[in-house]
Length: 247
Image 1 (spheres, rainbow, N blue to C red):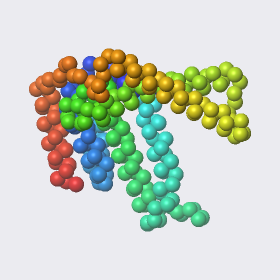
Image 2: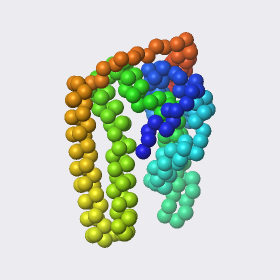
Image 3: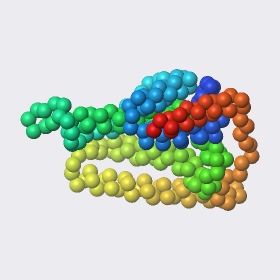
Image 4: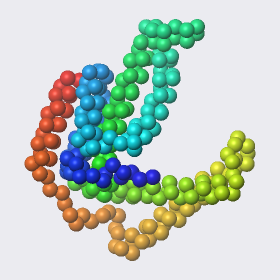
């Protein structure tokens, strides 16, 4: 698994200062999550679509990511319209679809997709090391930044290790089922994955100690904002302030 697939590019969005991206993304995500007005959520959605377009991120990979997100949203559509009490919209035997349930499902769908678009457009277009660097500049504790960076850096390694073990099982003729043998096999895989992850973590930690690591990463280079970053940050801040006043 590679979490930097969208970070390769030379568009306006890719070239923005990572600190500006985070200062725009975090408040916007909270505002979107807190809003319950459809027209405001649509405005947020249009902003997310605009950022995706400016970053030239429309691709099969983007749709694959959005499909994964909306698989969970689809589960909500299977339950909320029937479980939320309110004005009946459709009645079929014992089942009743309420207007309030449809509205709530629609709001959650808008919020989820909007925040996903913003995450990909602003955080996803930035390399992990630059995100960690920006978080450090924004005052986040250095140990928390280090944990964030190492987590992002080695998530793909653990995933690759799991895929290797899964391919090994497949090569030996293992076929998953509901039997105790399958449950026992997956338990062994989980245990072995934990052991290998722990051993790799020890090797990485010892390697870092040999290189003089003391709990945080020393910053050799620093960001420098441009007039483009200042203009974008000012414009988006004014938009966010307007939305706050309307909430």
